[in-house]
Image (cartoon, rainbow, N blue to C red; front, side):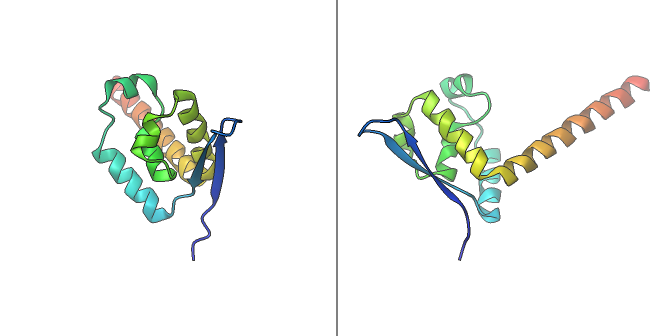
Length: 117
């Protein structure tokens, strides 16, 4: 039995408000998402230019949203859901941040070594 967290996000205040369920990924789910992201880079120019920090298609891994749902959402709604995704999956996103920091430090030390040589 999984103890993964879930959070319900309500987008809008009226009767037509969209309700999105954000879920915490399991380790296996997270690995599958990383593999999918590596194998499927963002190729839609509009999406790539509009969203620098995430691919809205990734919301399907973390929520109950479908591809059709995403097409009906505003950029602000997608960003709001992505913030909740990051909060619910803070352990995984913290790990990604640490890994990115290490990669940057490693790259910086490699450049300074080659600049000295």
